[in-house]
Image 1: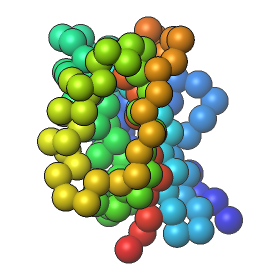
Image 2 (image 1 turned 135 degrees about the vertical axis):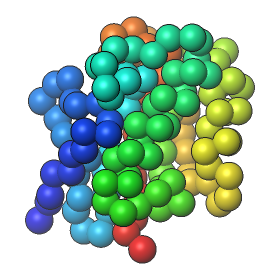
Image 3 (image 1 turned 180 degrees about the vertical axis):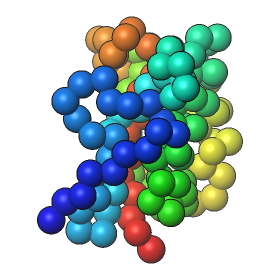
Image 4 (image 1 turned 30 degrees about the horizontal axis):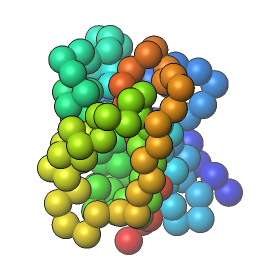
Length: 126
């Protein structure tokens, strides 16, 4: 059985998908892009600012379920430019300070709304 999870503390889906889905003791969080949940506008100011907003949005969805970043077991980082890897990694490390999850990072041809970074995650209920 699956349960759709939504919060107004993170941007609403911009397509036919859910912010997250709870199933079998896991929370599957859809890819988050740097949208301000209040204005619905893209956060500009470089890849570091965008990464910070993405992770803040991800954290808000986890918090809706009583989880936090420590519950994340797998993350996938999508980058518009792999040259941004170090900058994204720096901010990512500020959010995942202890026992970071398994992670993949890939460069893609294009991301929604032409943002620089998108991150999706899988978390477990503990």
